[in-house]
Image 1 (cartoon, rainbow, N blue to C red):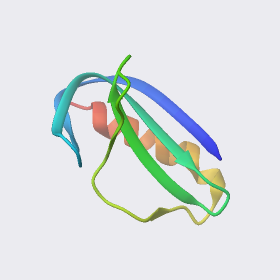
Image 2: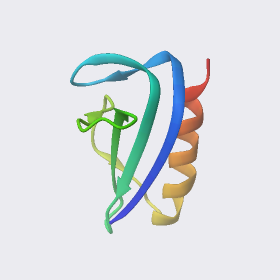
Image 3: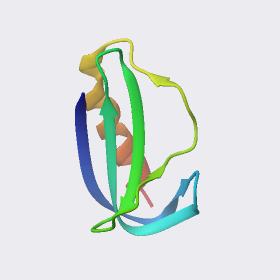
Image 4: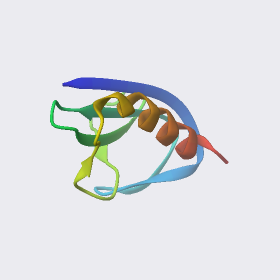
Length: 80
């Protein structure tokens, strides 16, 4: 399983499944297993609890796309 992580500041907030919108200094984590299943999680920097982003059943057809998808998500989530 491959994991990628990016820290960014979200001034506008990011919607989570569990607690609604969170904002501030956040960490995005994406994990991709050998079958292409992609999991998306987010937390406040330094916090213990992780939250999921809305949606389900994310799958990559090519495992090499994990890096690109992670970077795109981080960029979209941090834009004002």
